[in-house]
Length: 132
Image (tube, rainbow, N blue to C red; front, side, top):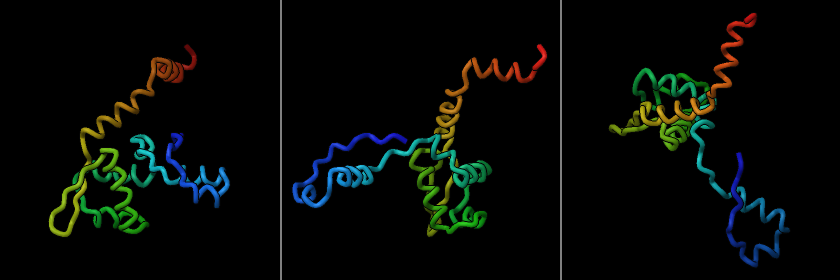
């Protein structure tokens, strides 16, 4: 992932304690990049969550029961999916229910389809008929 350079000004008192390279590293690590929908959906746990949620709405607890990680870890994955628009959440009492966001999934599909070109169609056709 490419990071945009940060235009933050470093206070003079910081500059006197840290060499330039370290100051740049400190500035760059504090930048929060906007998550990419393809990158977010590509992670295996999040992909599995999307597949489960395709069958219907589930609570975080119901989802967490299916994974070898903590409920908190699943919540973090769901927050990322929500941030890029792939899922939505609603709160009812003490539970938070997640479901697939059709608009976000359509955007993901369009993003994936943008990689499919006529050259790939030709490659698939050639693979299907290797002796033609």
